[in-house]
Length: 114
Length: 117
Image (cartoon, rainbow over all chains, first blue to last red; front, side, top):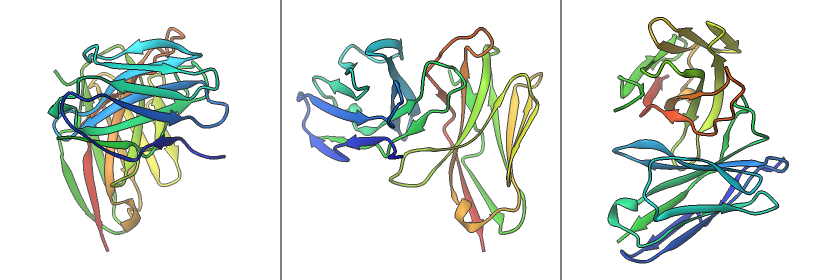
């Protein structure tokens, strides 16, 4: 079974621009979560989608948004980019809504904001 | 304020010996804990998990111990191998006990394990 895939793997943007990252979950997985990893803050939860609905949201500003499509693929968008948004963005999928489902991570998208 | 803490940023161990990675948490609502391993330029890989109704879970060379009263868990790797060299993250979630479906994991900042041949 193919793993979680994320595109693009690397991205360079300038301040004020917006960016869209894509995540394709493992086949059959309906839940997708997004995380931001930075050297200072570590891995922080952004939001989770399940069956096209946002079910959970972390403590990030409204510039960070996401959505999930009927095939479970998910996108996250960051508008008005700031230097501090430079990070590794990780997507994780799991089969269903059970709290004990293991989350499987993709390789991440490395975003650099200049 | 960090809810999950890994106080050792790094650990160096000789091949064949035991590696012990520690993790402390502050939120008593956490009832499910996981360990992930991460290599550079890759996403975290799931290693092992434990529910708060247990105090130990084993999977091959990996064993996780949970001490709820101390709000402490540890990952033991025996024997350690050079391929185990990576950053190890402890993560916690809540909601298992009441049938919740929390998709947000709270991560520690990681411990870099180096296993010397």
